[in-house]
Amino acid sequence: MGTLEAGSSEHARRRPTAVDYVAALFPPTVMAVAFTWLIVTMVKSQGGANKYKEDAAVDAAFAARSGQEQQRQD
Image (cartoon, rainbow, N blue to C red):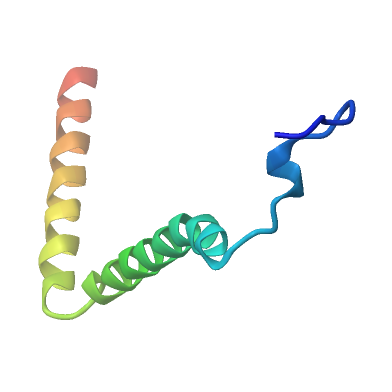
């Protein structure tokens, strides 16, 4: 190795290779694909045949809770 000037390093002088670019872009790309898949799955699961079942379950839970609150007040 040669003498280095103050404030410089061997790594700073190296030219980035294709592997460096792939290594830098791979994690955000994977996260973007995973996030897109998650959103698509959530949107697809909304509505359809299960929508009425889910709505009925939520309405029943709210009714049960409001019934319990009314009994406590009496």
